[in-house]
Length: 119
Image (cartoon, rainbow, N blue to C red; front, side):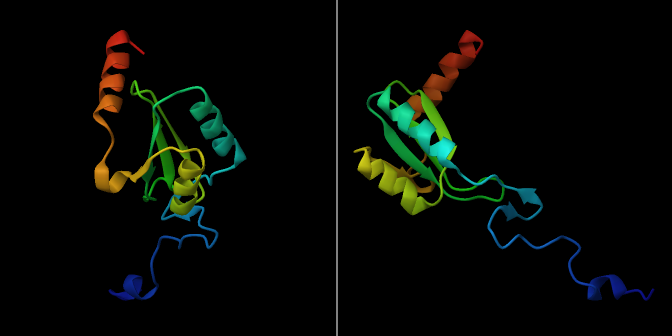
């Protein structure tokens, strides 16, 4: 084995799958109808909801973060950014790009309250 042979053989990591369900060495679960059903049930039982569309990362696919008026929240994978905004528009929920506006302070305060309660 020559000194530089290891560089000629190509990358040692496998390429992402073509179906988009794998990013680097991490396999990402795709969204399914159970995710959409959860989001729908969640918005039907809460008020003052805003949607925050989170972009795809190396670890997670596109997600929709829903935050209620009191800071309670849920996050689920969605098929695409366009789907997330369309879902929010269909249900008359304002939606924002989380990478641009961040998450609301009331969500952080909700998490702080739950942590103080021991949950």
